[in-house]
Image (cartoon, rainbow, N blue to C red):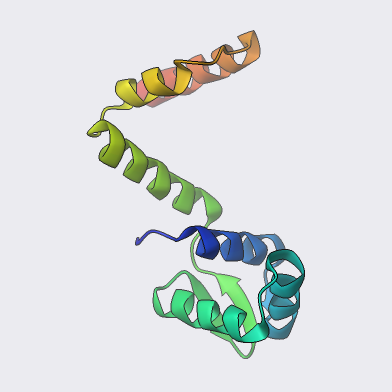
Length: 117
């Protein structure tokens, strides 16, 4: 899966939140939420359709990828690019200037245990 630019991600959030959504309603939402003209909305829609992120059939737009799929891809790209693929280096940098609550720490421990199994 290719990566999304920030503006494309914001567009996809609107699709995920409202799908299936008619293309004219999507254009209205993009104007309201992003300040985009209809032509901008339809240009982004076409590009994302060509790249396999959305489907636009009979003027009804649906996502072809889930938000979780995109998040996983984006997270992996950040770790690979900025931390040479090292998850411990990423976590160290992320936690260097913040404290976790007990609940957050327990949740993360649970995720780690599940990933190790």
